[in-house]
Image 1 (cartoon, rainbow, N blue to C red):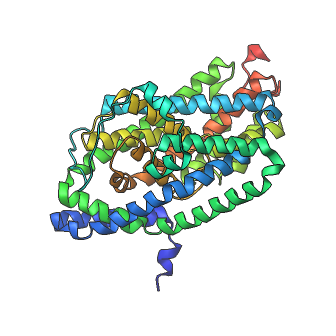
Image 2 (cartoon, rainbow, N blue to C red):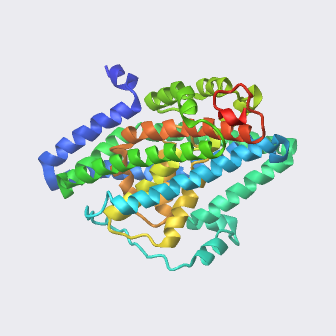
Image 3 (tube, one colour):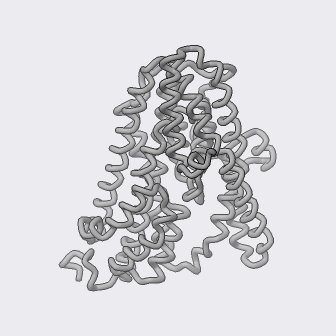
Length: 409
């Protein structure tokens, strides 16, 4: 009877219930508080999955990477470009969010029982606090930066042990698969949770929430465009021809934009990069690695979402919190690409890290699908750009490549 519903993609189901939620909110008004519990349960489930997924996924993703010394110069260069461009994406997000302020004036009341404490730590305190005295204590206390440090440190140890850590790798791989399966179950409730939260938002606050959400989408698209401008500058500075690059990467860009899946674009992107003159092995390694650790578009989107939430609830973020947002947007997206709903879980991490209400996830979900298209496209384009730039730097790019400026052939 409900086969048509199960055959429909999850994003489409979410969109349908978002529309239903808006209509219910306009009709029922404050009475939508009676259905808000559905959204609250969904948010609690996402909160529950944060550590269950992020811890094993980060370690498992790191363990699948080779030792940087064995990767060689080009591999290290690719990683450096990945990290730099992701940080720049976060900085672009902060600048746009504070100039255009999409959530300003919304004035959402804080959720019942929520208490915000303005951070009093200096940046030096934050840096010192990253290293915990008790790893399990950091986990139980929800000290997210400290937990991430422990996880990354543990992942590095697994890599260093090599074959001796084979059993650990299997454990973390299977734990990741289990967590992903559980998250898939949770995300089946996303249409109902997002619809209930949207109904409550519109019913309690009125249609005024729709305008800021529309502006948020515009700011996201503007930010993703600026990332492409950033790529253009990097390639031009590297002696490459940006417009030839964008022409060559058109197919993977379109596939990723329409499917919202960088994993689905992996093979197409490898072939496109090889046609640009990148050696086969370098293209396969670099693009595959990029699918795991390089997500400029997602980092920008999530940093923007955090600031949007802070503005919507009128909770200003100080400089330390802003730096933390950029840092964590760079770290928590690692190894979550291609996992349905994982972006929602990692956004929950960012909101928790700066003390913002996680209930805002329901509001962001209303426009998540629309914003997913350009951010996934930039994730894919960024992979190809980084591989091409690193290949050019180490003179691995074919001398016949159309990307080479005439004076460098």
